[in-house]
Length: 499
Image (cartoon, rainbow, N blue to C red; front, side):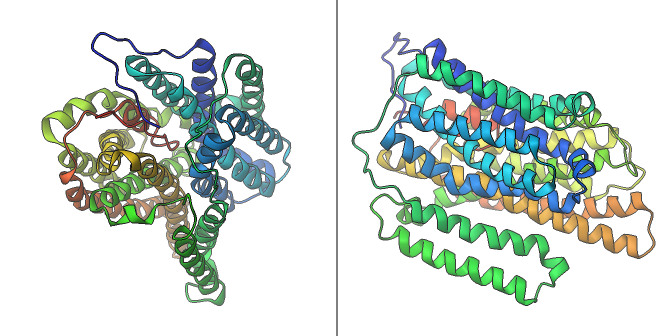
């Protein structure tokens, strides 16, 4: 999927109102839903009697499934019809919202969120495809920039709306409203959006690769989440890791043989692509992990004791910082180059995480503002250039495959880091409680240890940015705007620039 280059003065093809409505509104509600979930977890925990440690699977399970299906859903759209698969994603999203809202227990919420992982990935992948094939030139730039803005608005509004609804309607209210909005998009899509396919693409779909990705991630994340309780050398943990390793070997074997692989293994020889992809994984993991931690920390009665709405409002500086830095990214890349901008971004994120390592139980909210802004601005600087580096490092016919690898990396980073920091947070907090520390101090110790993990990850990103220095200096495409704006909530398919 490539952007067409308009001739000088040619505005290109603009998207119809129907296409803009269904793609922008759908990405808005998907991102709002995703960013609100961490704010809702304490209320869900209290209502269902499910521990917060268990409910973290409502976050990691979403990302795990999304990682497995993001590329496959786009391929299904190319082969069977982008509108058809997009409608399937909407139907699945509606069903998952209803299922979650009607769930009386944590297991239902977690299962519903896993289904939403598939629906969200499908809506985003096929929505961007619909937007791209219906536009060209300057019209495409305008449409994708609007799409990225809708992603950012959804990400910013989610915690606030979720917090308001918890107080007014209960945590279920968010899912009922999202289901109603998604349902309203169905007739608009049927009436106003034309079907499109890629007749040149192979009709082969790598379902085996999709299943094997899930088989790698699920047991690995289970071992990471439960290792402290089961014992890191227990049969259960070692068994999970063995299954993950065997699945990884099977995945490589399958990808070498299928006609249209989920991951083109030949691209993994490209150092720039690998460096950029790892940077994307780290940036998505760090911001998702931290937002999960602070959403719970802010609401705990022993620490800040904020209401759900106040907690949503408290995360706003991070989202605002992310949005504010986005327009500055292209000029920074033109002046400094992709590698230095990525390094600068990771440096700011490292500083933000490092400040939180010193958290104490008596900290008030004001002490969190600067770290949150530093982190968001830093990762806003990383995400767009890293996305651009990953696609500019490969030939034109491999841009789609490189973009797919990057998109999958975002989901994997979100899932792995959320599971990791949740485990560190809970383990260290429990240890300090057992040693007789107050609840507030124990919670702060857990947050501090988890932020140390995130500090190390961000620092590693600075070193890896050296690999991206070789990426060509080039204009950051419109897809990178969307990626930077919505990086803490979702993967964003990148529309490559024409040469």
